[in-house]
Image (cartoon, one colour):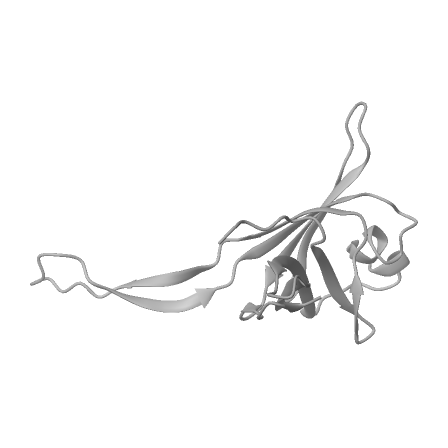
Length: 152
């Protein structure tokens, strides 16, 4: 199967009970999905034995261009919430949509990846001869669901 391009991928956050696309995103990374390892080795065993424990769904890292006037992008992600009006402490629904090729009729398809997460960290970076950038760390709360590819 050929690789897919990432151009066209986007991330959405639930704001006021609706998914809203976060603007100016330059990168998205899902990392750290793992299972707990439970050592069940007995003293009489000659090799280690393990059981698999619960899944830790890890974190999502989002990189974006910083734009404080963007109430649906950078500003909505800041720890104070949109325009600094609220402090978000609850896990909310998020959705990442990635391209996944074309169907037999040549129609572009996308795959939704859904999860609940807390906004764990938000930072702004400035450098010489560079735009302001921001990064966001989402701590996944529960399972990640990788949906099926479907026409966009």
